[in-house]
Length: 459
Image (cartoon, rainbow, N blue to C red; front, side, top):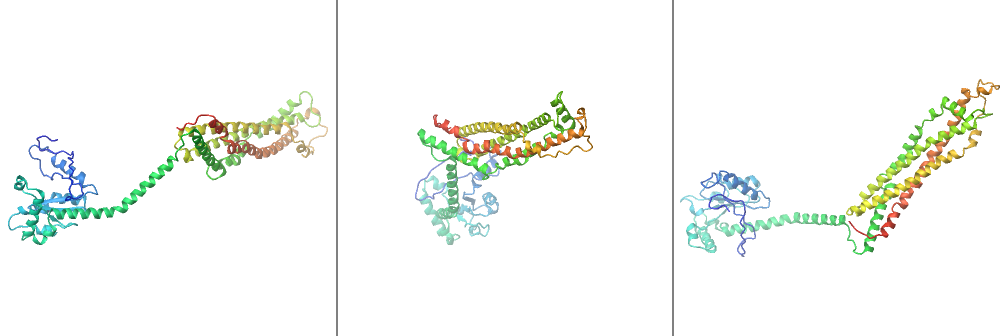
């Protein structure tokens, strides 16, 4: 990969070894840390090697073999320095000392191996590898390991540590560490598995139960999901979920406020009453009371109630449409079927439009009913005292005296207030009957019939 150069590559070479004499671990042989670039290496080789090594030793589950030659001061070991940075507690760092057989006579590495020079959490292990001469003679690994044990057992410096030295002991330490790590990780592994199982089960719940392949089973599934939506919608209306209270707000706040804003003061002003009475009398003056003028004033006043009545219908319609949208979004069974959501929304809104039209006709009919037949008894009970300061012999051309017209306006206003109180109670009844109750009973009735008569398709 690097040709004849002395550069390195971060592309790993995988080698699998199967033997009863090796540890069941993945050994990653990394290039040694270097200080300077030699001929044939890029100037970035020092940083490149360190970056490569860090990508492996940074992993929390990796075991670090910090290898240092015995003929080098341990205080200057780059391997120990890097291991300390990535594993400050030393839980996964094992110190390995090599080239013990190449130390100058009269020197040894006892202080390092016994942890006096630099203490690690795990014991230091000395290793004697094959020499270049052994490699040239094709000395196999079993023979090399026997030679290693003979070296430690016969060494006056390391004889007392022979049972804790060598590659075989290092393999035993690593196996024990692997076993300890596995035992320590088992609770978290079980927890992770249980969490994954819970997540998968939640995902399965979200996806829903399997759908039958035949048309009958699919139709049943669709109708079952529609009923689930219908339950959520009714919960919004009946108070189990938020939203239905806004309908009461229309009746308790919006409608009374709209009725209060009607321009009756202007309509029943002295000037307008005089105009209406005069036009109603025509060329013949009224004899006792201007009945035609009264009726015209009342009819024109009652027409103002149409606006608030229709506005109440429209306001409740908007609330119901919003509750349909919320109910579809809150119905878990529908979440994986966007096309069915759209179909249900379209069918529900179509029904709400019909209910709105019925409600509009009904409230307008209530207003028209008030105009079609006046409550005569109301006027008979009104006081009939003569106007203060008025002359009983008032000529006909004085029939439009201000006091007389004010009394007419006052009487009409009293009657309109009575009708207003009535409509304030009957308009909500009509709206609830035509829109809210119908939405609870028949919101998807036409959709059920439509689905039952066509081919079922899930999308």
